[in-house]
Structure formats: structure tokens, C-alpha cells
Length: 236
Ligand SMILES: [Zn+2]
Ligand SMILES: [Zn+2]
Image (cartoon, rainbow, N blue to C red; front, side, top):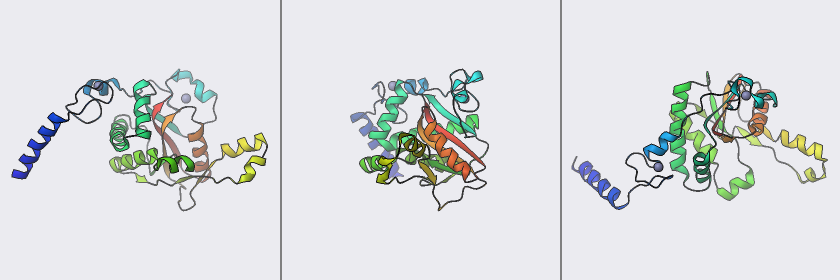
């Protein structure tokens, strides 16, 4: 008991000496450790969206769906890719990662509970990072996020469910068309796992054209998954 009180006093002192500042506006934060209440409130979930791909551009007559061959059952993004979200994602990728993973996973949990976007999820998996990039950065930020979401939502997390195919040097000898076909099928489902009959959720940071997520969803469907969904922090 005494220890708890001392701890509380100590926290108050350190808060006073090293106040937590809002990542966005540098104002002092009283609650949480990333954004002040005002900045956090400025982040609102996307609502007026295309039911299939989650785009906010002309949701009733979605141009993205019309010009794409999306095979996923549904895609959802929490936020518009505006300046604040863009800076946060950048910071999350290159700097203080855990704080952001914690923040975004908490938001994802709120989003799932509020909108119930996906009827059922068995497995959650990140978009795999390119091997070279992973080596340089030492971690996959999407994997950190999926791990935290899985914990909160009680999904099964398989970080290496999707693998990037290895290309041999002969790739350079291929024609442009052949190379493009190769890129279109750059992913495969890790043969150690079974997705047959299951509902899979693929997670990435930003949905831009959706082509990466879509090519992953295609290989997951080829392995006879029941449904495959896409979830991203932001939507370009
Ligand atoms: Zn602020
Ligand atoms: Zn759409």
C-alpha cells in the first residue's frame, strides 16, 4: 500500500519535470501518451464509404471498385490519409514504434466494436515487408500492429502467413510483361498453414490502390479460404 502511494507521488513528480507533450501540437497531455484530447478528437473514423472497398470517394458509385478487380470480400480503413495520420504512420514506421502500435490497435478495437465490419475473423496476418526493408529496419510495423489487434480482439495471429516469393537472378532476363506478371503474383500462402474454410484478415498501414492487398487476397482465395478481408489504418 505504502509502495503504491510512493509510486503515485513519484509519477506526479516525473510528470511535472518531464511533462508528456502532444505528438501533434506539443501541448501538454494529461491523459494517454501520444495526442492531446483535441488532436485525438480530430481523428474521426471514415463512415460514408463504399461497402465493398471502403473508399470515401463517391461511395454509391465507387470508381475504385469499377476500375479494379478486387477479390477481397471487404476492405476497411479507419481514417483518411490526411496530414496528421500520414505523419503518425511515418513516425510509427521509422521511430517510436510501440507507442503508435498501442494507439492504433486501441483505435482498431474501437472501430471493430463500433462498426462490426467483418462478420467473422479466424486469422489475422500482416502484409509481409520486403526482405531487404525488414533487414534494414529490423521489424515489420504491420506485424506489431496485428499482434496487438489480435490480443485485443482474441484473433489468431499468424505473422508469417503470407510470404513474398523469392526471385532468382533470371528475373532480369524476363520480358517486361513476364516481370509484371511475376510482381502480380509476388505472394504466396506459407505452406505451413491451412487457410481452407477460414476467414482471414490482412492488415496494412495504408490502402492506396489496393493492388498489394488484392494480390495477397487472391492467393489466399486460391487456397480456398472462406473469406478474406483487408484492414488498414488509413485510406489514400
Ligand atoms: Zn494536440
Ligand atoms: Zn469501392
